[in-house]
Length: 516
Image (cartoon, rainbow, N blue to C red; front, top):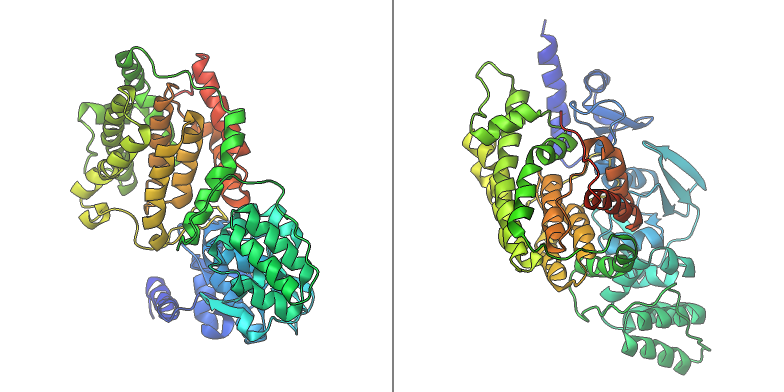
């Protein structure tokens, strides 16, 4: 009789064969009952709805959302194809979000399907799918992207209601910026004789500085005999000038986000004190806070470290005994990497205090921080030297987050833009908040993004003369919730308030977080 481990290995081989074939949404019929039940018990499958499953990671406990959020779009594509064949299409609002690279998991995904049931299908983690019995757009106005059937970009802009531009201005402006010529939307407008929508889109194009397109829509519709009255659907004007032929929607979205988030930060964050007169004293204070900073930053990432281990690393006596378990070795390696990276960041702080632009320093040193963070793990043979090559070359997901970071191809465009934005930003507070937020939003590396994001934040703090500030592990939930609000809802307010309060307490000399 085969041992339990051999039986599980057989079931895992069956699951791997499905995954190798590109299957994400696993149907009951895809696996034998024995394999399915064995994988469910072992934690390698999660049930989504009756008869449908997605692969899961055994090391993530019950109730873990990451596997579901990572599988959401692929699951929905397969499930909808199974139910409706090619007779379905995501609602125009969801279509627009995906066209501009926003793959945030919605709480409810609305689907147009002529044979829809007009009822929701409940999915894990308070998400759902609603198949609305709506007609589909004409075939020329639909596209398939990553297995998802969408309204084409022009058709989605025409089909979205006025409220979308007010509620989702970042996605709406990014979508408008992708239109190369007004003829793209005019074909849809004229086909449906939609004079009201034409006035709305003309106003929307004018809002983002596309005067020629706005005028072209108005003139063409009037020439065709329609009475068009232009109106701006956005709640606010924007001073942002988007490049006319920017090829990447990810770049446009980030420019728009930066522009929209600046003023709320300026209004709420403590005023920068300015560069200190005594830079040596500032650097001494940075060194004094190292143990506390390392303890809390590593603890936020789930490492179990103590002040004693951190001091051992600083003294050079950091390598774990051979008798220690792998987890303790991982903790020691993380502490060693953090110490090495901290020394590199401190050099950057010194340059900033001497007057170097913080954005330039970050651009110069980021790769050094990353190599230092993982150098000890490479030396120990835990990770490959190839992993130090640079930005990630595949997808990455954030635990418990509905935000899906941009694909690796977009990272190559977004990281230079981040440094350009930091370099061109005149307000220290904006550099602090958005430097940290945008970095973890992009998530350019497979691992270490949180630690590097906090290093970047503190480099930007130094540029304004703010003190080095520790984010306490005891407030991890508040910290993550604030980042989630900014990533998913575009609301930078909670994150600004969270960081601003920590910085203000630090400036007032209040005791910092304890170190165990």
